[in-house]
Amino acid sequence: MSIDIRNIGKRFGEFEAVRDVSLRVGPGELVALLGPSGCGKTTLLRIVAGLETADTGSIVLAGEDATDRHVRERQVGFVFQHYALFRHMTVFENVAFGLRIKPRGQRPAEAQIRRKVGELLELVQLSGLADRFPAQLSGGQRQRIALARALAVDPKVLLLDEPFGALDAKVRKELRRWLRRLHDELHVTSVFVTHDQEEALEVADRVVLMNAGAVEQIGSPQQVLDTPASPFVYGFLGDVNLFRGRAHAGEVHLQGMRLDAPEHAQARDARALAYVRPHELDIQRYSPGQEIDASGCRRGLVVQLSRAMVAGQVARLQLVPARDGAGANEGADTVIEAHIPAQQFRAMGLREGETLVATPQRVRVFLKEGAPA
Image (cartoon, rainbow, N blue to C red; front, side, top):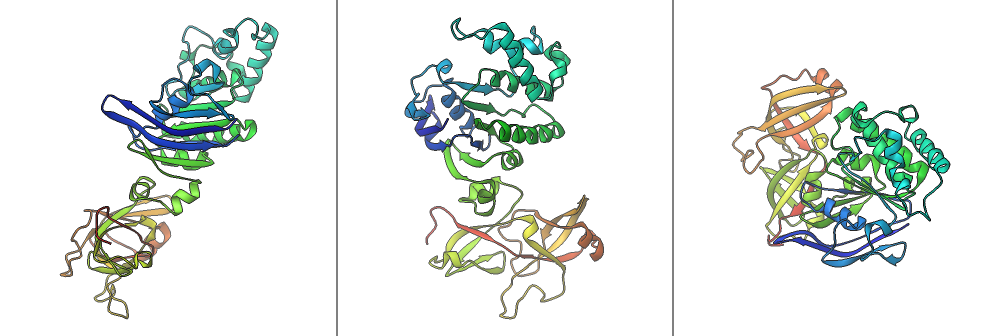
């Protein structure tokens, strides 16, 4: 079943939770709504489910307008963050609940219900726990039971609201991989809400970045990582260093550096935001003039190593701009983060307090809104 979200808007008093959002989810697709708390992603999900009513716009399911349909008529399965299992019911009874409350003419026979629940418990790898109560399960097991209960009624659409948000990091990682495998097996059209960028990028076919009630970008995980559409997207997805400066005639001037920005060839002394990922900084020991290229342009930033931490194969360096008389610490965030291979860190024998040169290998520049161009 496809989902067409058309120009949806929703207010709560003076607060605009969702602003003119349009999105299409294709049959069998797994889409993540990603963004910070309060960005409107859960409200949008609840509107699709029929748990909230939109002020404007429409929801179309499988080509039919479902805007005014009751939640029971939408063939939607919903999985909540906090499981919402019935504590007084066994695992079996929880999963069977949706089947047993169907109208008499649609309700399966008890033998069919038992067979269906058994198949679902096997699917979520919990077939031996049918007689247990929710209090006897771990958080990860409860969430899998909640998912089995949602799947029991054969939903055409599966909606998940922060499904792993209440779990610890290790269990979250295991479950999101399991969810991706399960989706590849079932191919049910699915939308899940998360504020965890790693979760969205690992699980989803497409990611919808939301901010302040509106969509900032829609694309595959690789697309939103490689070509962020806005400063918000760049800053939200992964670690990043932000530099402020000016763009002029295809170059950007930041903290004493002059770097190429050919995409802004038409800019004329425009305020600019430049983003550099930690792994996009080349780190070398400092020697006078090392940061200057053959044309006399400063391409690197003179910094001091304030702290270093080796985690697995990566060394994470915290750098502070050095006061070298060239304006190198003007307009910078206080700390610059660089990631280099742990092997390189050990080979260089770097020590805290050393003076280094950090040279951006890739810079993404955005002209600041309202700046002259």
